[in-house]
Length: 165
Ligand code: ADP
Image (cartoon, rainbow, N blue to C red; front, side, top):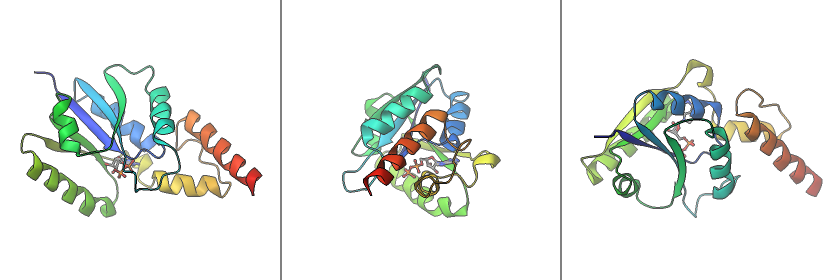
């Protein structure tokens, strides 16, 4: 049986910390689906389409991985796509409580779906989309923390916002 994992998240935008989890996840699973899981009530910097397009660019040359988006119950998406694992990344202690709750509720909703955690690469310990967006919005360089295409998009976005002030 093929081992297919779903890596869900906001990816607003994808960072090198996410890319590290994708690369390492691909060594463990036959197939990986990077899922932009969205919620209409949650504010985001990038639209779902922009997030999907950026991920698509980043994984363009990777094998056995694709990107998708979904607004609904994650375990249902996982089963509908023939997967049985939810892949998540863990950074500092602050991630732990939320991730623990999420893993337990998903297991309660479907006992056949397991959540697997990969510890962050030490270089990406402090990298989060929120911090990246904040630094970029204030004119700070985030080069090296995000894929080049994301860096360009952030510059475009914030230049454009500054022009509109
Ligand atoms: P969410 O809103 O679901 O937390 P994120 O895009 O912030 O979405 O994160 C998706 C997943 O990737 C989460 O499991 C998160 O812990 C993990 N992640 C985010 N940034 C990093 C990083 N720098 N290193 C490792 N894992 C990360």
